[in-house]
Image 1 (cartoon, rainbow, N blue to C red):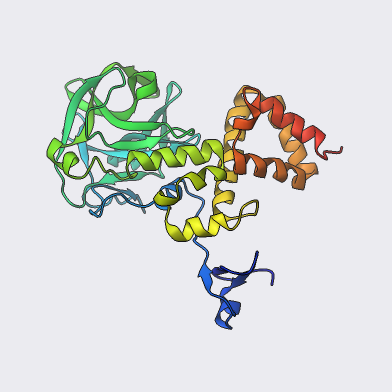
Image 2: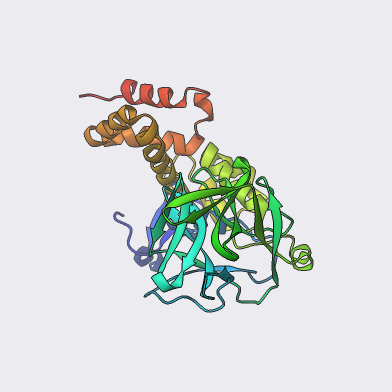
Length: 333
């Protein structure tokens, strides 16, 4: 029946047979399974992967609501006059960027592309289990053992949390960018780059005990998520042992069909097109939007193919290949 109302169930025996909550309560001849829910949120991709530790989370990112900072927030230093600053993060251009929380201004400041950007919607790093932290000196994009991940690039690359001293006080928190070999922090209206800095880490004995676990999960999680976003939903089937069984079972029975995971990857692909092409190749982006407006089903077919298989099959001319697909396979003025 359509539409499906409430939670969604699927039959493990019947092909492409889904039911809503109301119909599921009426019964069915075969076993029904609840469809795993994945919200449109990057962290949901991490949550579908099994935790590698049974310990409680070492840290938690907590959203700021009604300008009230959460308890157990991590103090990162002080402004002149002794006012504390905290570690936070916010989205900018699909990058999740660590930055400086300024409680007196009810905002966070994050660095990106030469400028400082201020947001009133952000998350604060908290330490609910009171683990011991330390700031360790490092340089040139390197991070010590136990470094805490603070966010990610739009393509999945990891940002770590760093700070620098300005005028005798630790005034600026920002992103350690390993691939660019530096720390970038916001100050005033600009983004500043430093080759030497301090990195927020767990004390060595804690990070050894917990296998360097952090709020984003372990390195295997990041690898799987990056693989899915780069190579499409088909990449999931290499990770059966790492994926929550209910999600893996459902996705494996919905090959070539719409699923919560495919929708999530489609959203990421479309956002990536919009972010990258709008700046580098605006004419191509205008063409994509024209196809989307005039022949959405065709646009969605191309988008879905990329979300299913990634762009590896297009080799080095991925944008040209996508444009040709838009033209050849059914686009009409």
